[in-house]
Length: 208
Image (cartoon, rainbow, N blue to C red; front, top):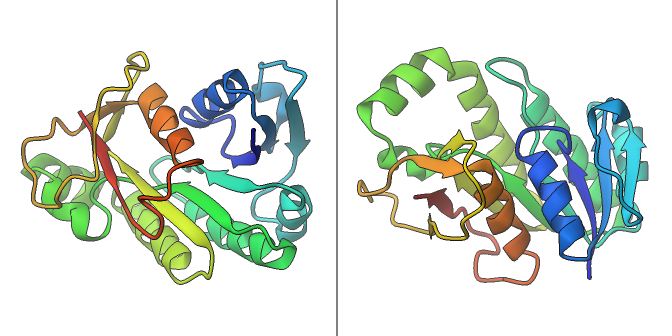
C-alpha cells in the first residue's frame, strides 16, 4: 500500500488513476481545483482543493506522501502542464518526496519518430502545437530534477476498457504501433510503476 497524491485527478486519465489506485488498496489524495468534479467516494480517498499554479497549495498537499502522480492537462492551449509540474517538482524537493510518475505524450522528445505524418505535422505541428510545446517543457523540468522520475508517453487516448494488454517501452523508431491507447490502460501502466523500477529515469512509450 502506497500513499499517493494525484495531480490532474479530475481529468480523463486522472479519474481512472484515482479509481484504480483505490481498488488496489492505496491511500489516495486527489488534488483538484474543484472538488465537486470528483464524484468518487471512498474511505481511503482524501480530496484537497487547490491551484496547481500556487506553489504553497502544491507543497502543502504533497507533504507526507510516498509518490506523486501527474496527469495535468490544459487542452490545446495553456501552460498548466509545464508550470504546474515545475511547482510539483519544487514541492517534492521541499518536502523530501522523491518518486514522480508523470504522464506526457507520445511524440515528445525522441519519440517523435514513432508518429505518422498526421500526428507529426498536422496535429502536433499545427493543431496541438501549443500543447505539444507545453509537454516538451514539462519533460525538460522533470528530466532536470533530482527526483526518481518516470515519464509515461501514451499515444492518442480512447475510451476503451482497461485491458492490461499494450506495448510499452518500444523503440522510438517502431512504426508498428497503433498510436492509440485507452485512458484506463494509461492509468493501469502508471500504477504498475509504483512497484516497478525498470523505467526509472526513462520515458517509455505506451500504445496498442
